[in-house]
Amino acid sequence: MSRVVLPLGLLVVAAFGLSLMAGKVWIAPWGLAAGSPEALVMAELRLPRALLGLVIGAMLGASGAVLQ
Image (cartoon, rainbow, N blue to C red; front, side):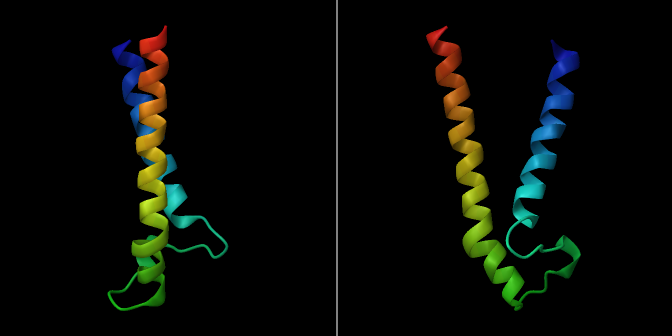
């Protein structure tokens, strides 16, 4: 089981990073400056959406495991 956890964890981290960059306009991580509009979109829109998706997915997975 431990051989499966590390690749799945890395997959979650990669998917989280891609969800931050993907959208109507692709935002590259190296293109973020402190006062740029891309940084505002990242901080105000995409980061909360990605965090909420991660937390809700974890809660649904835990509730499914409990119900089994």
